[in-house]
Length: 381
Image (cartoon, rainbow, N blue to C red; front, side):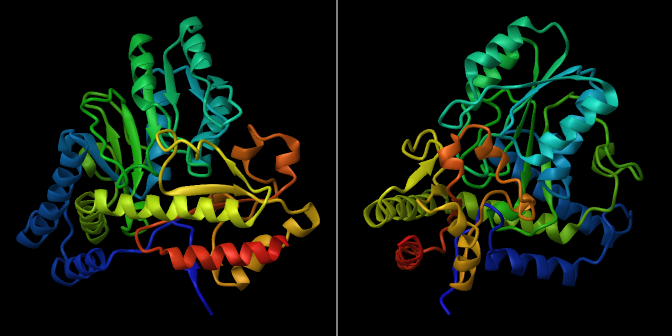
């Protein structure tokens, strides 16, 4: 059976070079990086070299990179510490954030009684910047803005420089979940005054179970996990040396191949969109996908003209045909509540129709697009 993997926003396949590097480290470097003997120092050297590499691509200092188990932990570390340790009493976020942000904000609201402001969402699925500015202008308390750079379900891109500028003007802290952008874009954090970001290796062809938080120098973020003094006291626990080395290699390869792979993936995305429009009358696209500067090149959220009774079987039928895609975030795949992102801005008539997220990598082909489009055409007919 034909197999097509169009769910790269959920996770990506590990590059062969990454796997080779991880095996090399697991085989040759058995030491605990906190040990002071030679074997431990070798492991520590690998970690610190990876920290320098990642920092260099983001144009920050190595001391500002803290390794975590992934994007969720990085988000939790930053937002929890902002309230617990940095004096934040007001969080401005949006209803279309990843649940790694929304759920921790809800918890902090109950646990600490902080004020939470949810930004208005425009018809295209983007946050209302005028609303953000108004909330900042009227606010008198220490504030954290938490807005993702690229929405993981519809692909909309936040004007991160504009948000950073507003945050700085109103003395607010700014955290951005950049899980969908690190490894896919050139990011110069020396030019973007964001205070904190979160990233995950498995979104750019690295291993699962490792990521990092960027904590702007002198931010005074304190550990979420208590134990040893690893990561300069910011994150206790023995570091997974092989995963960190794999993440470093994945980012190196992503940056080295960025332009060529972006060109290929963009061609796949636009070809897919064109073929859907040509073959499926009434197809609709959620978000800002019509504007390449306002949407990531890596995914497309498609609303299909299918009646509700038939829509329930769509993902199942695609899976039977060997097509891997999703309704939204993989983290909520068992939910029957629908996408919280789409629920925030789509009209009821569009919500009644199935929306599918297709997300792409450099390994995808136009032949795979043709197969998926023909399958969808047959189902819609």
